[in-house]
Image 1 (tube, helix red, strand yellow):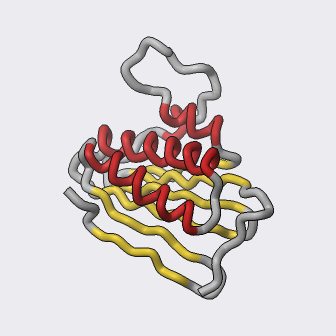
Image 2 (cartoon, rainbow, N blue to C red; image 1 turned 120 degrees about the horizontal axis):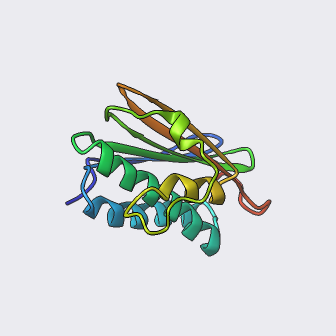
Length: 151
């Protein structure tokens, strides 16, 4: 199954990755491939690509688990010297205060490690969640060699 929507928009200062995925496990594999292609095209190196894929995977997996009837929109773009990665769904939301915990999650639990991993791998993580849905915005510093591509 393919993503619902597939666009890469070129602007004068940046290229934006934006795709909508169905809330199903197969979408994680589709996301990994599409995001790697985008990140490589804008000059992000292999190690950073893997880290960013992992964070996007974890956020998408959370959306699939907690918003199973809502398409998940994933966007990525470079702003200044940072890569911004945003994952949004239309699920019922959750108590963001519970996600702010910094203690190590239960390693024997079947779930509950995604946001902990994301926080450890990204430089900044902001979560907005209410009954209309959840958006996780993650930011990562890019090395000076990675610059946005001009149109």
